Image (cartoon, rainbow, N blue to C red):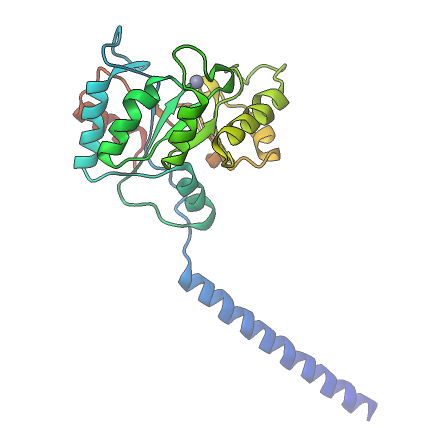
Amino acid sequence: MLLLKSIKGGLLLCLIFSLYNAGTMVVSKKMHTTSFTPRKHQPPILCYHNIYVKPPQEDQLWISVNHLEQQLKMLRDSGYSTVLPEDIYQHFTSGIPLPQKAVTITFDDGHAQHFSLVAPLLSKYGFKAVFFIPTAFIGKKYYLTEKEIRILADSGHTIGCHTYDHPSLASAKTDWNKQLDYSRQQLEKITGQQVYYFAYPYGSWTDSAISQLKARHFRAAFQLTGKPSSADALFTLKRLMISGAWTPDELMQKLKIIFPN
Ligand SMILES: [Zn+2]
């Protein structure tokens, strides 16, 4: 009797276990059909610095507003739409697809012309961009004011952290609280929005910088064209510094080389 009971109990357990397994199989099959494997493929990311009506020269640090407009027009006419860091983060972590022709446009260092010259152009072409701002520069001559940064954020552009006073993070003496926590708090106070994205000054990323960013729940970080980390692609997103001397066609060719599909 006892033996029969234990056999029955064993069969019942087996049945429950099989049903449980069948249930999880159905769920996982369902999940498989409703989601998909993230491609984890970054879009082309453009990086600009000084935008002037008449710059002293045209290179990867300086571009005339006319040439910037030609480049933006080419991207729009070629069918590109802009995606923001949040879109890239969602793409990498949840597999949410990016548009076929996605591009991210970033402006570094908080120059005053990013508000006076760049923002109206972005609006003209229906683009949103990212502004990485070292907070020690805010309100200084030739740099963005708090009010301008707030307007950029309110217009749907992303405001990103670019440290307090733009040191190379390769130094062992980096004051992480000042460069990451304090500068981020300043931007969040100005914009009233949370700041999750970071650009390494000079593009120089290190493993310890990645650890510090992750410990503070930053979601992604942008370098320049250095080798990305295979373990941390989201924290070493590649950006190409765009030269004012390139024609729109040259820009397109470089994008295809640096950001192959
Ligand atoms: Zn910078």
